Length: 119
Length: 119
DNA sequence: CTAGAACCTGACACTGATGTCAGATTCAAG
DNA sequence: CTTGAATCTGACATCAGTGTCAGGTTCTAG
Image (cartoon, rainbow over all chains, first blue to last red; front, side, top):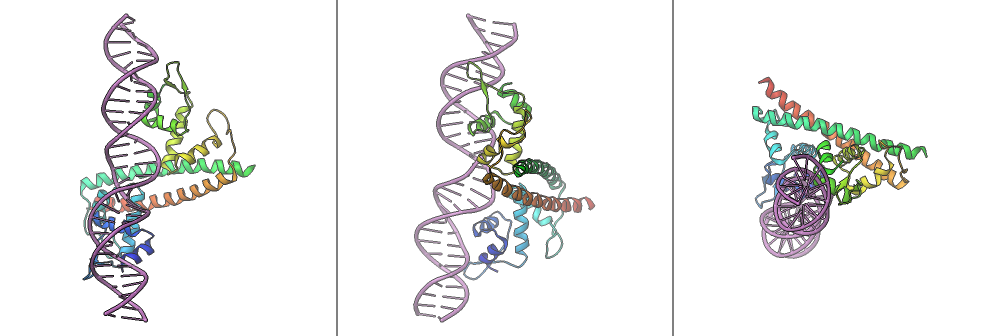
């Protein structure tokens, strides 16, 4: 599929898809004329990338992580090195703290919303 | 207490504390010489602000929200307007989606970490 | 009084993913 | 072939909180 369709199906802008490629996160075949062509699996890949970005991971970490992930089209093509495992564990703990913060913020919002609802 | 201590106790930089004040999020008394002086409750307030920033709220929303919050030193000093409630509800839903994304990313990381652990 | 730590304001830089625009090229349907 | 939609590259802008530095003032302990 081409970039426009991939953008539509993932909700990610074409700009971002090209950026992901420049960052080495998303490969693409090229037509003879130089247009990008993606396999079906690219949809899942892009969604994953988005999730990881949202979780606060930087391009470099995602780039290291991607080959170790269980992909839709087959198993992981690499095993994380001890160094990477340490990094990912730190990221995971950070995500845990993030979630805890978000839950607290959600409670704060709910209190204010409920207080207004009682009025 | 003064800005240095508040920074130490909250883990927030002095720079950020001054920024919060400029944004109307954090009030301060002033010594005759112009130095900031904070009440004890400022510690909690700063922590809350940090959490809300981490949840993706912008200064303007936090500014509207703060007066409606149940503070440590007394009840809320304002009730959210319907308009604000609508905004906060949207924020809350966004936070829900954020949490769901984070949980998925955490699972992804755990899979990779575990896969390396089995080796 | 004095020295050094702490604080003040104001300004500029940065981060890093994303938006946007320009000008050129490719693709696909008629 | 033609034409309009889609895509290409490259460059610059943006956002918003935070880091950092400069030059000056205030505070406090000795």
